[in-house]
Image (cartoon, rainbow, N blue to C red):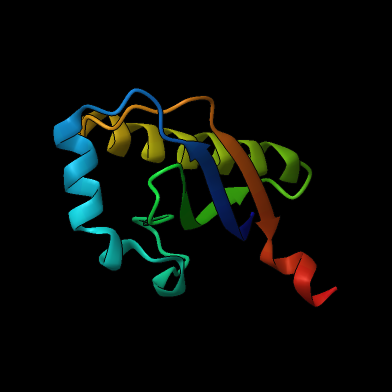
Amino acid sequence: MSVHIYRVTVRGFFKELTPEVRAALLDAADEHDHLRAAFTEVGTFTYDPRVTAFSFRFQLREQDDDDAPVEAAHRAEARALDLATSYLDESGIGHGDLRVQLTDMADMWR
C-alpha cells in the first residue's frame, strides 16, 4: 500500500448566472482572488473579477495497491470533480463543462 498526494485543479466557466448569484460573486470577488489560492483538502475556489472563469484547487490523498497507481489518480480526479460540482450546485452557481488537471506530487521529486 502506498499513499499518493495529488494536487488537482478543476477549471470551468460561469454559465447562466442569476442576477443575485452574479451580485454575490462580485461582492465576494476579493476573497476569491487567485493570489489567495492554495491547494487544500476542502478546496480553494477562485475566479476572475469579471466573473467569467473559475478554478478550484485541491490537495487530495489516495491509497493504492502498489500495482494500481492509475486507479488512485482516477479516484482523486473524480473526487475533486465531485467536490467542485457539489459546491457550485449547492451555491446555485451555473457552470459549463469542467476540466480536471492532476499532478502526483511524487512526480515532482523524480
